[in-house]
View 1 (cartoon, rainbow, N blue to C red):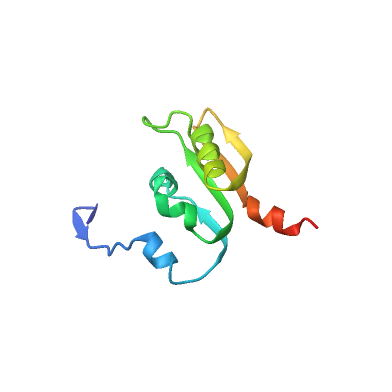
View 2: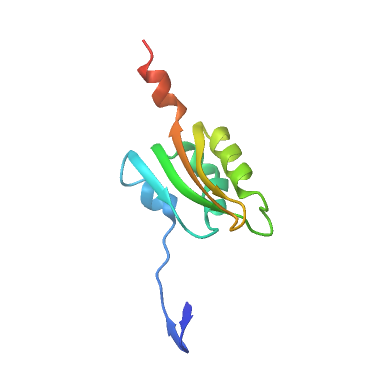
Length: 109
């Protein structure tokens, strides 16, 4: 439930990975969830997500004071080649693009 101006609003939540398992390969996954990216990337199911490209924001928080480093490392661990396209240390936000490494291997003769 989310509170808005004193009114409660019921919001149905779904498990992203359960939902994604039913749609087939993902060409581009955009992650812009204001700090929620850590839960998605930390989930062991992220490694098997059939995703070719990720574009995302990474937000510093108390648990992840260097979200850019944590995020790029996690993307590398899960088979992606991440590139930081923008980084604003003052705001604690960065933009990251990542391509699945297996796509590059499949292109080589």
